[in-house]
Image 1 (tube, rainbow, N blue to C red):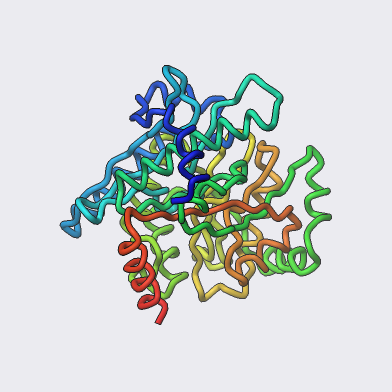
Image 2 (cartoon, one colour):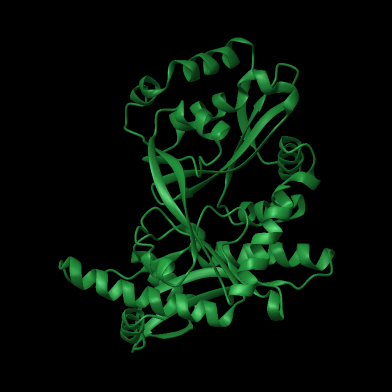
Length: 348
């Protein structure tokens, strides 16, 4: 480690990394920079419960919600929410599956001096990064777009990857949103309407699971187990934190379904599924246009546009491209090498 790095970490030593009580975390989240509903106690606990249920079925080690804070005395300056899974050398701390982000959040500071803000947040981040590497063999975090300074992760040797999504502002006059669509997207919406497809509320989580699996050619190919998707969605629905919409074919068959999450004044497109038999119907485009017209939220977040085909589809709705970051660190260089080899095998 360089002398510069040792000196930098010394400023982080005044921070104590400790668990944050749920009530304190909820209070912190009310004003935290980068605050998101997905970092809330309710969402993270539900994710841990869904992962725990899946682990029980596969006889694997379960999952636990954790809220870690960087404390300067009795002040909670920064924190991170996630789920701990695995055991021993496999223990992992991560943003849960199906979550667009949790990541590091900061308490607002009572100063307008940029250098002071940067210094405080950098030191708190360094303390969290160091603690995560010591506690867990692997840490994977996806941060909100408000988190823009990834240098502490880079300096600590973590992998940092940019990701992208689209945000759409929603004025009172939603015809302006329609005018912002690319021509191909307006054509897709009109085609779906003309051929008799229509949008209705959706509450059947089992159908969501089925269509989610169909997107990937079967649940066994899906990035998240269908049981986890279903369990988490059912928990969120029971808590009134999701709303679903489905597009029905003229025959009554479900062509597409999307579940959304309201995060303050932003509506997030959360999880979706579609029947490949209706791929040419443009049913999903019709769902999005219906929701963009009717939601009371003032902004829409497509929650990811990282694959070329998905980015092409979502760009057609005329949103603003917004970057965010994913970070991954390991407890040792050997584990990092092993993880790289495993990824290479999966891609081959």
